[in-house]
Length: 373
Image (cartoon, rainbow, N blue to C red; front, side, top):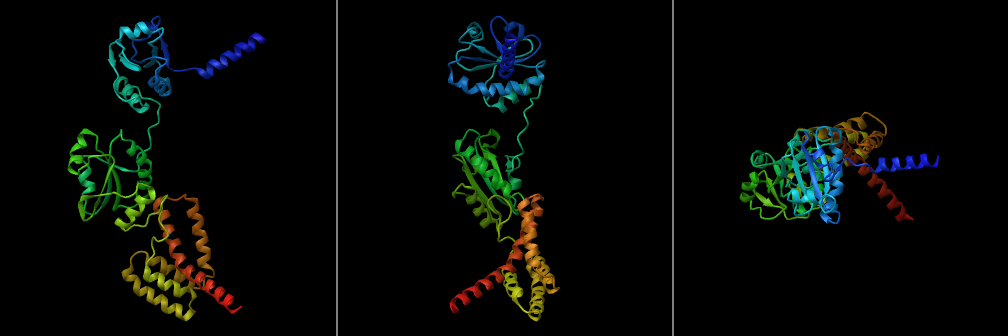
């Protein structure tokens, strides 16, 4: 029984530590490589720091092709240990060295990036075998290149913020998640676009030259009336970018997404709303007629003010408070489409224009009462 338990424990440990990377030595190398299946082989040394960094990525790579073991091989050789003769045979002078062997064993040195995506892209290109790596979500930022840049950034109907970046740039990598959030926030705004250009890409070099991009990231704003490109030299927080774009585009976007509390509000209607909510029935009729007259030139937002007034005039008791509570609940759940959420937020903002005066009136009564004591 003890023997069986120890065997079970050993099998369990082996299962946990099982790797999809094949270990090659001089004894089995020729039985695997060049036998009808292509192979990516890493020649490493146990003491090598770069090899240690690559190790978990290489394991992920092998896992990503585990479903295709009959079509492609992911392997490694300890070229400073048992596999030293193989390292010498294939001209390995530094660690790690990665080599691609085709189905017949013809070698080719791998010289692309050592990140998972680069390695997987190389194997797929060479073997035609796709990895099981899920593709990253599409970027929120609009990606432009030399072919699409003019159609977007130089469109006179659009305000466009463009970051010129390079894949290797550390500051660009730090900026990317912040910039993605800003792009997502402004996605509903057709005339306020957040875009990016890989200025390190050879085909985009003419754009970098044209717009004086000499360091990364360089951020420029192409407004509807200035297509030379205004250098953005403000802060690089989400709040900084959103404040800048709201001022330049005339939008009311909020940090974290959605609209701010000012969205949809119209000063002239706010003034009427404040008077309306605390006015007598006769005065409300007069204010409603004034609002109708103003609506012809106030734009789409006016319809929400008029609807609230109609509900109150028709005697719908407690409408403002009940509707405000209902809309707040919808906004909190965030289950609707972005465009619908924007519409709800504007309605909630306009309802607040009516309730604010009531709150101010109540506050004044309290202050007067306290003063009389």
